[in-house]
Image (cartoon, rainbow, N blue to C red; front, side):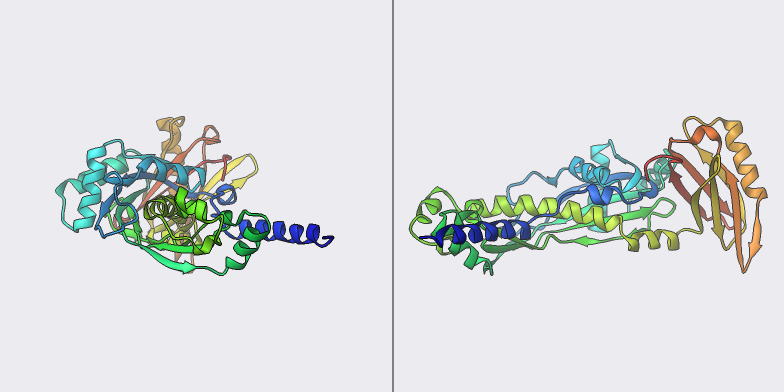
Length: 351
């Protein structure tokens, strides 16, 4: 009898350990603390369902299975870009998604790119396709001893995730250059295995059965499984997108994609824009709400006049107007060949 308190303490410890192991990791605070990409992005397209199989993850969902607002929310909370807005034309969003899904030409897409550039964006983020897929049942997982221990000693085994499932749904999103529409990054996102407890994967009858038999012997309710896996799959796909876009690979691809590398440097009394490129610049432009035309022209003259050449590269540097502190500013530069590079900064703002 004296051993029981010790056994119970050990059991509760196992419960806490198991709970920690199944954390979905949806806290974006750590990601948000990392510097945002120096971009202003327009979000378009949508997670419109493509394909359909029996027992599909998103069966019965709306045509746009993952709302575009949910995509915008996770990218905003993750501080992925300095600025991200949603395409307000729902019809255009769907046409854009269908266009890339069918891989067909669209005479209106070039005009859309031009209007997006004119609105002050650097890139287009297109949610192209949600390819639905079946939910695979991978069976009882390695936590069944914990489930059994907590069931027989405490009667709470139904709360331990003891069975694994995996959705085959995938989400394709592309980050596209606004000059040509070419994809500079095109991840195919998956959600991975999902561990469910009995209370998540069965119905009332299953819970009653677990009073007399261990939870891992109780069957699944397909509707309950689909609901639980769908919610986790959606959350993981969105988190994967935010983490992927803010990763080192994307940062490098953006640097490699541009004809000129633009950066913002904090100096005493303000900030300076530095441009490094292999070709001479022919034009520069500064766009921001609080900057006058004269201030923008002065910045452009100073930047172009500062050219220095070393080891086959050209370097330009100029101070930003003092009024730019804390507000979003877009810097655009063009080379003699007509290639254009742009970046958006928030001098003195959150990185």
